[in-house]
Figure (cartoon, rainbow, N blue to C red):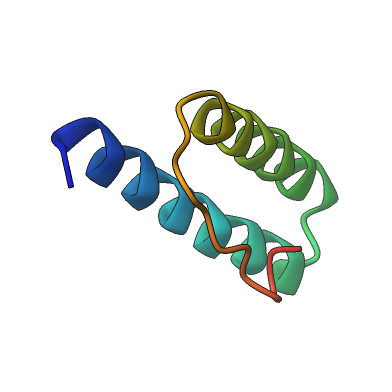
Length: 59
């Protein structure tokens, strides 16, 4: 796995965690921000052929 793929997957995992925490805290604004970030990262991954597993808690 190259550095780009590893970094992208790490950012996705981190954003999924942040999204879950925002939802658990009831912070709708932060959850919306994290959801948008996650969607951008998933789009970037798809554009570069990087397979991403979507976490059930972040979906």
